[in-house]
Image (cartoon, rainbow, N blue to C red; front, top):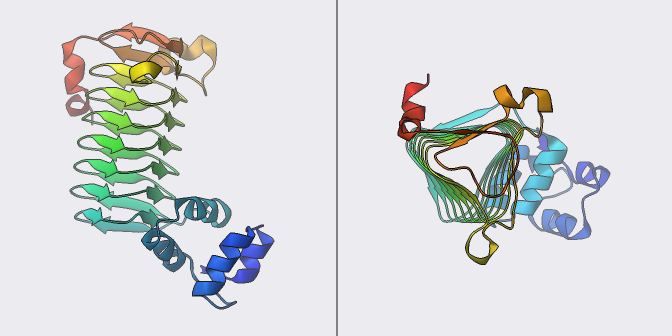
Length: 234
């Protein structure tokens, strides 16, 4: 897909973004992913997120043994990594992000679909997914954690801000929203896309101890065997 200057103008790009575009390309522009790659080199995550919203996700897949970069990493389709995905700044995908090992980002992790990892998922900023967020390790974010579906971790789920899930929130260890002086100041919401009458099936919040700031969802206390949750499924 070719992105031209006219397309950006029609989509309502701001003056600063057009200046950036003019500094790198002529009016005919460049291929969609090529522009995302350049934005990643310069760590312009807000511009990349805006472009993904306007141009949409692509039906493409990038498969690598690992992704390790001192910059950001943006891809219009799905990201599949056999080992670890580790970026210094932002990890952004139009589709899903899957890693056999961990997923780590100094800033945010954002996916149009699911985010899944065989080990921990960690971000200095927020973690956001249009689908589920699932990790056999812990899930930790400096900001909020949001999923259109469920949020599931074999270890803990911890966010510096709120935790919001369209369906269930399940953890083998603790579930915490807010830390330090902010502990208990942010809400935990499950079942945001589920009718209240279905909470007992599709908005379950499970952990060894009930989160003190659980606002919505159906809490079920879990025992130690929940730590093996990821290994027992699929």
